[in-house]
Every structure is written in structure tokens, then in C-alpha cells.
Image (cartoon, helix red, strand yellow):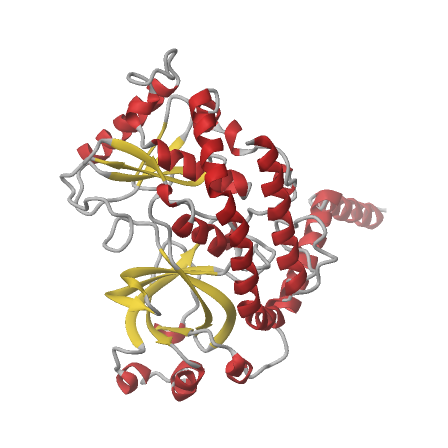
Length: 461
């Protein structure tokens, strides 16, 4: 009898232990686990393709090649911590073939063996990007490359810091380049706009596909032309909801700002920059803000605000909603605040699934400072005048898209053999993506959206 009771007690003990264990796996957890598993499998299928001879595939390409070998060929896993590396910049396929052993075979003696200023630089590299670095949708990521010495790359002006932009959310790879083209050639009052060069990228011997080498937004020679002296009050600021820079603050109207670092600048420099922005905002939201002499106009370069607004409104740039990636500068020379440089257009030009997918309707004018500016008839007039003035160049810019797309099509198709994005789900999942199974279809969608957008703005302005 005692033995039977002992067995029953053990049985009850087993049940009591098992029940809490089962409760740890509710349906929501199982659903998330399955979702993650499917995402992982899709990523694996899309990133581990058949073994292809990447160099042979590049034979018909006219694009330059960038190859990076990290010390010890360690993977690049961080956005904060750099890895030391060797970087090669190769103009032609023939030159790439000459360096093939060093680039693909990953020989440890590569640095001593090549040693040429023409095609190799000692450097550091780390990851970059926010949502695109952490997304589950793809393993194709962007990088920041910092050379030990300034260097001109592929006719781009000499500098140390370079962005290797994956354009992972933009299946045309053209949206950023197009916006920067407009900034350099059409809406030039927004100041400096980055120059770009499409390249093929290898990291530690592995071909990563089509990338865009581009200039970084920074105070530096050949880039944003502000006085770099830490004693000078000129500054570069960024609207940055993450508030993750050395000096950050939130304005009285709730705009999150970061003041970009200036070498050897003291706290007083950053404090004055914060005071300058807050003083302007106070005037902008004051009762007499439209007054020509005492209102906001006395504090800004109006042309830069107008051009910055038009580029972002025309492209309906989701990232320009005064939350992130919106830059502005202050120059001590004329004591004016300027909007710009323009930045980050990968989820613009219809490449979104929210209200920005609709080519009709205004978007930027309802965001923070620009909502207030839009209440001033003078600002609205200036926008309409500038749009009409530049409209012929907007029409011409569609030819630029066609020309660039034609030059890039074979390279984009090669990239798709690695990442398989055409016709696949890829954040931000612009409407109709399943039907657009070719590069050409994606370009036509972008261009068609922009033409509809321009026509609608014609009726508005």
C-alpha cells in the first residue's frame, strides 16, 4: 500500500513539474518561433546561392571594384567597433584579375606583396545604418570605411571616410543617387550633396554584390564647407530620434537634435549650438513669426529651406519627416541656419507601403518646423516659385534615371543572383512588389511614380 502511494506521489510530482513547463510555450511564442524560422530559412536561401565564379561574372561590367580584407579575416559584426583591414580600389576588370589572388584567395601576405598606393590602402571598417543593419529581411549591409590616409577614389574628391551603401531597401539602387543628383544639379541651394560611384564589393574574398561608394556627411575639406576650427561656432546638426551622439538634446517643441562632433571642441561649443537652434525655434513658434525683420526669416537662409523642402516633398521621402536623417548647418560667417545636406532617400519615390506610397498629397509640410513654416504664405509662395522655375529640369531628370538604369541593369541583375530581391518580400514592401520580378520593372515603377508625383505637384503649386 505504501509502495502504491509512493508511485502515485511520484506520478503527481511528474505532472506538477510538466505543467509549468508547458505553460512557458504559449501559442504567441510558437507563432513567433515559426515566423523567425521561416525568416531564417528565407535568408539562408537568399544568401547562400550556388557557388559562382564572381570574377568571371564581372567580366562585362564597367564598374570599379572595392575589396576589403579584415585582419585575420574576421567578420564585421559591429556598428561601433572598427576592424583593421586592407582596402583595394580597382578601376577595371583587368586590374581586378591581376589582384585576384590577393582579393579572393585572402593571402595573409597580400599587404606586403602588393604595397601599391594605386590600389591598396590600410584602413578600418565597421557597419553602419539603423533599421537596415538590424533587419531580418537581408544580410546585405552597409559599411563605413575609414582610410589611414586621405585618398581620391574613382574621381571622387579626396577624403578619409567613405560609405559603402548597400541600398538594400531600394531594388533599383537609384533612389539615393537620383536625389543627390537633384541636389547637385537642380536644387543646389540646399548646399553640398554627396557624390557617388557604383561599385562591386568583396569582403574577405566573398562577393557581396552591387554597392554605392559615397561621400559621408561631415565637416571636412571637399565636403560640408564649414570652419573646422573648434573655436569657431559653425556647426553641423542632425535631427536624430535615437539621441546617440556625443551631444544630444530635445528642443522645447520636441525635436530631437544631435550636434555632430568637431575635433577638439569643448562643451561650450556644443552648448552654444544648442542655444542657437533653440533660439530660432522659439522665434519660429512665436506669435509674430512671419515678421520680415523680427521673425524666423532673419535667422535662416530661406533658399536652402525651400530647396531642401522641395526635394524631400517631391520624392515624398519618408525619412525626412523631421525624426531622423535631417541635417542642418549654422555658419558663423553670416550667422544663418541652413537646411541640408539632403540625405537618405532609399525609402522615397514610392518605395513604402504607408501614405508615402501615394503620389498625391503633401507630406513634409505637416512635420514639426515645416508645419509651422507652411503657415506662412511667404514660404508657400517661395516653394511654388522655385518648383515652377525648376520644373523643366525635373522633366529632364527622368532621362537621367533612364540612362543610369540602362548602365546599371546588368550589374543589378548580377546582384540579384546573390540576394534575390526582385519579386520577393523586402522591407518596406512597396505595393505590387510581387509582380515586379525584374530590375526593369522596378525602375519603371519608380519613374512612373515620380511622373505622377510631379504632375500632382504641378496642380498644387
